[in-house]
Length: 286
Image (cartoon, rainbow, N blue to C red):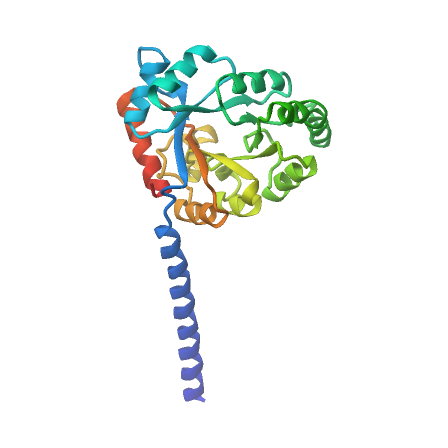
């Protein structure tokens, strides 16, 4: 009996060791995944706090290793921004329309005017007096009847982003929401940091898959959230929060992601933007 117990213990320990080794192998594989050659790196134009016009700012951002910027609707005169982009070889790749369900065609027109290739949209917010099911139906109705037809006419993709709007709270639901709209002109914009309050970035990437056309880069600390509240959770550098960046890279590589990754964090002067550039290189394996 004693020998039998020893054999059982040995087999149990061997199985545990094998499992640990397998998990370790997966972890190491994830850590070694690089997205170099797949990513175009960007920031919001307004994140660079310095004197000078768009041309001066784009020149500095290019020197720091960025490929382009995102802007808000009407943030910069299209003629001025286009000239600055041409002079520097940078691109205004996207327009952030934001949370409103109104005036999406205006943002599409602005995106066309600056040579962007997407408009980020958010389907409103669930709150007191705004019911979840009603917002689901109303936002899809607006997208189907107004936004998507105009986007198709202008050949401008609309990308729905996950934000703190108490809506589309699981990756399965967001995938369903996008699929129900059934248009080549509407897909997903995935924010790595926003989801960490109640989920895992790599799991969302796996579920959303090729619906993801662009990503926002920031981190979020669940530890700080628990100690200081929701918003302070964002007060960490990229790579120092709760995101599992190895797993994020692995899942992005698995869906063959190639496209824009835009930092959406607190900005500052040239030194601050240089720091952001290095952090993005580190977490994305660039």
